[in-house]
Length: 299
Image 1 (cartoon, rainbow, N blue to C red):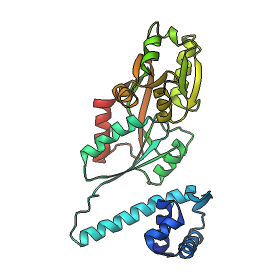
Image 2 (image 1 turned 135 degrees about the vertical axis):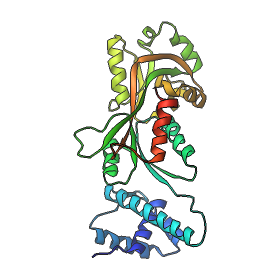
Image 3 (image 1 turned 90 degrees about the vertical axis):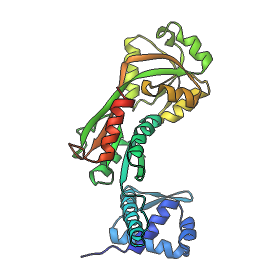
Image 4 (image 1 turned 60 degrees about the vertical axis):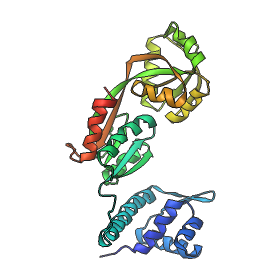
């Protein structure tokens, strides 16, 4: 049996956490050539490159991400063992690894995950953000417990996964107070030629909005397109135009970004899913998340 050298894995883990070999050297109190050599030996053992270089920083490859997640689990379990042996409470009796698709609104994801934290305050919550296909790949190898997405797992991806509908929400348009007051009148006709900020065309929400605008025969003036929902809202906060968001998050969006509701569009429905490798979920924290999503967050 070929055994893994855990010292090599520790050096890799430290570099991956810190982003540079120099910072890992400070943490481990070792010379840079020593760490670089040990990581090279780990790559030889695994037969895979774990890092690529981007300027002064090292970026994990796809395999590097997988190895890092396993290293996180290994060293967390090791710490729990030391805590148990020395009679200390581990504080991490339950771990929940969650993947969040990058286009899912951050406010919504936070609200959903709050339920998990309330269910088990001692739980260690680990969140990853990426494209759906990458997160599903991580889910398949049990690197994640669930994925929060705005679309079900597509049948084209060869991953044994089950889609659990968390709920759905209408869409609301928001804007700074003067814009909101102006475009609130005669809505939705007022959207014709109005300055608007939209998600990029690869997102589900954009496709839903494009269909709705076409049916309404509306052609707004698109000021900007954003894949990241938080950046879109930040530009809306600066008064560059109207922008869409989940109706379920109206209060949070208005409070955080200091904007007002223009109007709701209930006919445009965003759906959100939890994707797992289990048909019937038994994890108590995930079950609490489901319950909160359906009772308190989404309709």
